[in-house]
Image 1 (cartoon, rainbow, N blue to C red):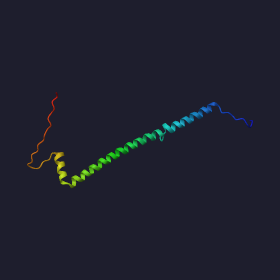
Image 2 (image 1 turned 120 degrees about the horizontal axis):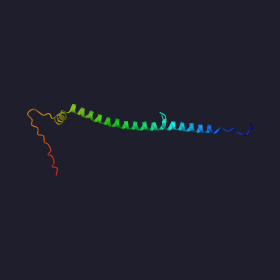
Image 3 (image 1 turned 60 degrees about the vertical axis):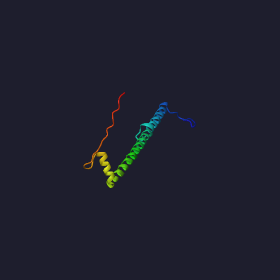
Image 4 (image 1 turned 180 degrees about the vertical axis):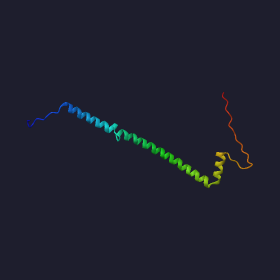
Length: 105
């Protein structure tokens, strides 16, 4: 071989190289377990679950405060018993008002 001449690769080698590069790029971007697509999807899911956890924590905190208030304040406990369970004191009359039905005219 002469010094200045390059040996050319067959076309099939070029095609295989391009095909391997495309496959590797697709694997990294779309199909792999740690691909950008899966990572983005998991980040969205984590954000959604964190928002739900914050919402549930706020509800839990408010219920804990209500529980503590019902345990320490007798007036609050009596009010809850009357409103939620319909309890009354002995010899007490309770009047319940039922809303009137509207006419369908």
